[in-house]
Amino acid sequence: MVAPDLLKHEIKKHWVQLLIMVLFISFLLPAQIWLEYLNLINIKNLSEDLKEIDLQHFGSAFLLCVFVITLAIVQIGVERSNGNMEFTLTLPFSRGSIYLTKWSVGAVSIILSWVISFTITAILILFIDIPVLYFTEFYLYLLGALLLLYSVTFSAGAFTGNPLAQGLVAFTVSVFPILVFGLTLIQIGILFYPEVNIDRSFESAVYNLSPISYLFFTYGHFPVKSLLLPFIISLLFFSIGYYAFQKHPFERNGSFFVWRWMERPAQVIVIVLGILGFSTLGYMSSSQEDMVGYIIGAAIGAGIGFIISYFAIYKKQK
Image 1 (cartoon, rainbow, N blue to C red):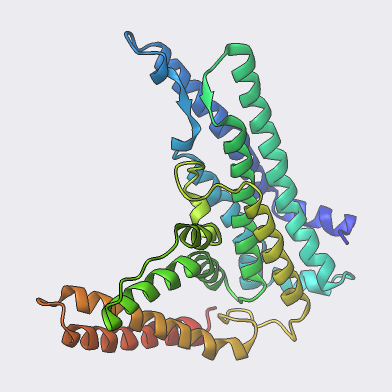
Image 2 (tube, rainbow, N blue to C red):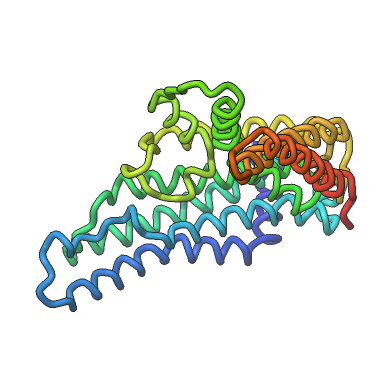
């Protein structure tokens, strides 16, 4: 459960990052919508259809994700690097309470700032009569995306021992379903030359299960159409991180993983992905798309994957 004293300690420790995140999430989108509206009404001879503001194309929403990801890394990865996590773990609270309290501070801050942004935008729409498309859908999608990306990054911190590792693991997990699906299809096409017909619903499922998909904020135009799914995936990642954080035998500050046994499987995965990726690149780059380029690319990918994984995973950061 969330401990009140620990809650105060967490807020006091990260109040700057929390304040910056809340301010941006609360006011960035309403301000942009207002400025877009002022710009549209000043354009003469513009049809009524073009005066509508489509929230699906608001690229600044991507910036909001940067703040929640940064907060998650600061709360765990940076704390491990500077030794604050060790101090927090000496406090008279269980590891589960510490994890839950930290996550709750970030999640509640995201929800609070989202409510402020939603309310301000709703007031603009109702009282100034700003024509906005996909208002409710977009804002629900936005909340799910922010909580999902925060939870993915936060849970990655439960497995890693430094900020760089936390960010890399979060990114890898976010793109993993799409990456494996895409590379597998390409490899099947190169090695066996079949006519592969993939059902569109399966493609959409892979896309929807990849957290990276929710960075694009394109509800309706892209396969992401489920408003409930990001909340479910957020809960899943939170639960995984919660379990892992409680089961740490000790802290390995500066190491890539807090569990040593995870290093070798992770290295194998990196090497395999390197082989799959570079073999595809070698095959497509060869003059006649022959297997020589495929084999050379696979060898290069294996070497690069080994070198990168070795220095990233086994070299301890200060």
